Image (cartoon, rainbow, N blue to C red; front, top):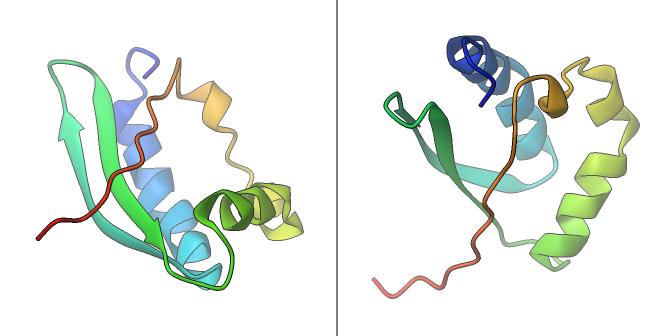
Length: 88
């Protein structure tokens, strides 16, 4: 996260990104802030007719996403994406 932008990012993420993700069929399971690491962590899933990667690509390519006016590159300096399998 860019220094000093964590709270601003989380606010935009909650207000704009989460509702649109849900419109596209994603479920957001939780979100955490690690202030020591200046990081925002969230868990998202997709159970629709496409793979997660396909649904995610559609989300990013959508006009709705473009209209949000939120450019993650203004906030994020990198990301770590992990695909996991639920066991409980």
